[in-house]
Image (cartoon, rainbow, N blue to C red):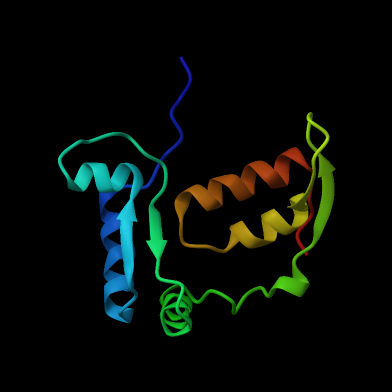
Length: 125
């Protein structure tokens, strides 16, 4: 029997929503957590949102999660991979994924970082 990876729990959800509210971010919760809020509980591993894209709201979202401080687009290491259908896609390198996930507050990101580090035999930088 395989173990289900830990998902986002109710306490973590409350913390995230509290930060969004504190910063005044205009958002709509969607996906499985929205279903749960409506009384239809389903296991999930993430939170899904629609966020208003106006510049002021994006600034509030950045403040809420300190987004844009650790990484900026030109610094993201990527590589081109080809799908089975022949479509070329730009994907963050394993080293970049590890760097982006290792220091976050989400438990799932920390688990992902450990798997990436082991799978790709990455060294600390």
